[in-house]
Figure 1 (cartoon, rainbow, N blue to C red):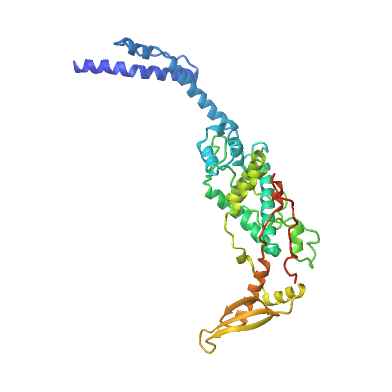
Figure 2 (figure 1 turned 90 degrees about the vertical axis):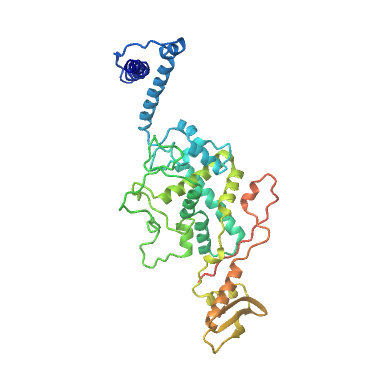
Length: 401
């Protein structure tokens, strides 16, 4: 009796599952698969309606077949299709995390995540957006530094530019934003992942030493001066890279930097200048940078003497202000640099020479780090309620030795 009940239960439960598998084979392989299982005798009308009405099951099977074809079609693309951006949770989370303008669509943000090494088509990679973003970052960072510190030496400006908008800083920002990277680029990956083709192990990576040919560089008398950096190098003072030097891929740092630049360019195109400048102030100028640590003087006393001669000041003189423990193991001397009655700088050291050098460095930093009270940049004139423009004071810069 128990065996008879078990057979009835197995036939009533397993038969619908077998019928579903048969229909799946028929839809996928296009074969008329005839079931050998006897029809189920339903006990009531409700159960019979569930098993006999196969319209819902056919729709589900058709959807499964459609999804499988869609996944296979995505494999032929080097990057995710445009319509996949609206279904990516990672992309929506990144858009909200960065507090991007609502006018910036997620499709453009997805394009900013595709490097040109992953998809060579310029209509689907971030090359054009990164070029625009690179120019905007250089412009905003340069005007901020020159207008805020008009006396900075050019070498210090190059170092500050690299600290604000250099590739290492941009790569660190991409990590802070929570951007994840795809192992291999392709059409089937999530559009919210950074996609690029990694450089092969052992291949040469482009660095600052990979430069383009400069005029007269073959001459032995050629010297890399500050003027040559202005005319022939990039905004960071590094030599420009020549064409055709790519190793077939990029590093993680380079791909992350291109993504951040592309986001800046996308904001400018979709939301306008005000939104792009606000994004720069919130994500770049908000990072603390101690400008005074970027100086590196080789002969500060000589540079201070030349600076005073250029500005028609009296010749600087070092005077001992105070001292303690001259005949002990740890003496301390405090020396001040005076130009007439004005004290230019002060420094302390274990010897008179060390204290004089530190006082000269303090005097030079006090001159170069001058900043006006009301700082205005040229881009502020783009605002509708901008006041009339007043010329910004820009000093001659460092002393050319």
